[in-house]
Structure formats: structure tokens, C-alpha cells
Image 1 (spheres, one colour):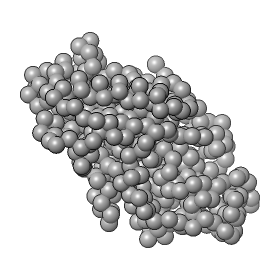
Image 2 (tube, rainbow, N blue to C red):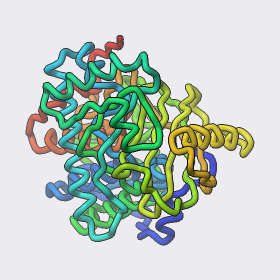
Image 3 (cartoon, rainbow, N blue to C red):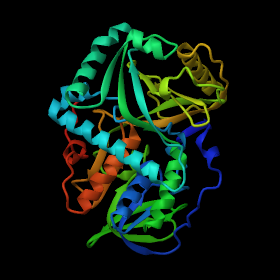
Image 4 (cartoon, rainbow, N blue to C red):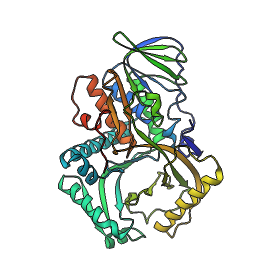
Length: 405
């Protein structure tokens, strides 16, 4: 299955990453992770640093799937707002989940800051603005629930927005404690770091089947068998390869462009991450070399576009939206792509153990910011393996009752 189409930006920023050998014999381990993208490598890093013997297999190469098309925003707020989760789950449960996302964001930021290789990580604040004036009451409700539950959020009126940016919006929420990263560099650097901590990685090793055995499972691959007590499916936007029947993912597609560098970004206050209340929404960020990344125009179609003409029409729409925000700039599109992404019906990820297949786990960050959810999933699974209770494991469990408004 093709996960993206177009000219990707991130792989060109790290052209000679470390490579890992294909599996060529049968081995034994405590845990095997299937998938070498963002979620799989984060899982591998977390387990290895916790002293858990783990093998990761990737059918192609590390970060070659959806990670290459990830736009690298690290935000604890996501597609489903805290106020929306509160309506569905109750405010106490919703706040607990958002607090866990905030902690996962902080943990990712600390990890990215501490890696030996620089991964273009920057701590950022986010500006979430009202796309239309009629969105202000909804936005205000979101601000109030964030504020009264201790999240670092500010309410910005139209005049304050206009004082800091060349555009006017009726209102916005500024949230603090987010970040941005080069996702391709981050995953490769994390894999290199995890290997030093004991993670065994095999690229070009495809999972063919998983069979139960006494005391665990045998993972059959194209290079040998892996005997393991536990199997983690970090298979991204190909949920059917995880088996089971709990995962009900909505697989869609989205678009992104990256511009040539801009001479000066002085009009962009503190390089805030920008996103909006409209659905589907536009989001915008900068890079360390003064490029602008614009994403959005989500479509309820699984297959990415397959022609340059189709792609360019969406890219020009994204460029037009950028020009509305920053009319003085006339940047050129240098990179453009369409990529698959996954959502869930209730906006929550699928994280944790399959109750019908003990010892098999999902780390599938569908809905919202998948990178944050991947970190959360890695810690939930690690705690389960160590016999600990994670405070939000029951909220995101695969067999939860899915309710939507």
C-alpha cells in the first residue's frame, strides 16, 4: 500500500542514516515490535531504556513509511478538543487524558533535547485561532476548560493577535509547552540511541504471520522466526496487518507543502505553531532553515493522489491560504506531498493489550497528534509489561466502548 505521493522534504535532510541488517536466522526475545516508524521506534526506545529485551522488525527501512510524511508538530491539544472529550467522557476523565498527553509531549521534548544527534527540535507555543467569528463561543468554552484545569493557556482578543501577526482573527487560544521536530531525523536518531541501549533492529524484515505457542508467540518473517512472549503492533496506517477486530480506523489522506527559505520571519511572533477551528483545518509551522510547512485539506479517501496535476492543485490551495495569513511574503513551493493518515471514531488512539489475545499489544496513534499518542502508547505498554497500572490505560484500551457525539 502506498502511504504517500510526491516530493518529501524530510528524507533529504538526512541522506545517509544508519542501516540495520535484515534478519537471517531464528532468534528469541521477550518482546518483538512490528513496525519501524514513529510509534515502533518510540516503543523500542522506551522498552530498551527500561531494560526489557526487545527486537524491532521493519519490512522496509526505518522511517520510510508515514514518518517521512509527518509534519513534525508536537502538541498536546489535538483534533478532538478537551471540551469535546469532556462531553463524551466526563470532564474528569477528559482532563486526565489531556494531562497524560501533556506529559507525553514533555517527555518527547526532553528526549529530543537529549539525543546525541540534533533533530531540529524547538520548544514552541501554539496559536489556535477562530476561523470564523461564529467559532468564538466554542473557542472560549475550550479556553475556559483548559484554564480551570491548570493548563497553561491564554485568551487572545483580535487586537492582540493583530499586534503580533499580519493577520486578524476574532480570537485565539495560546497554549504553551508544545514543540516542533524533524520527524525523520528524530526517528533515525532515536533508533540509533535505542540500539546503544540494547534494542535489536532488523530492517527489510517483513512479518508474515504470528502464531501462538506455549508461553508466547512465534513471529514468522521472511528471514527467520522470532520467539517472543509479547508482540507489539506499531503498524501505522495499515491496521489490518495487526489482526484482531477491535481496531476501527478511518483512513484518510492529507496534503502538505514546504516552501523555499524566507529571508526573514520577523512577522511571525515567536514562530508559534498555527492552527484553526475549521474542520478540516489548516496548520502552519516553520523550520530551522526558515522554510514554512503548511498542511491540511484532509479528504475522506484512503489512497493518496497519484498524479502531479492533482497534487499541484491542492498545493496551490495551501499556498493561497498561507498568503492570506502572511500577504507580504511570496514564497515558492519546493516540496509537496499527499499522505495517508488515520483517525478513530472517538478521537482516541488504540493503545494497549488485546483482551482476546493476551500478550499482543497495539500502539496505534489514530486521531489527533499521532506522535504524542505513540509516546503515550509506549509508556502504557511498558507499564503493563512491568506489572504497573498506567493512569489512562483504561481510557484508550482497544476494547473500549466507542461513543461519538
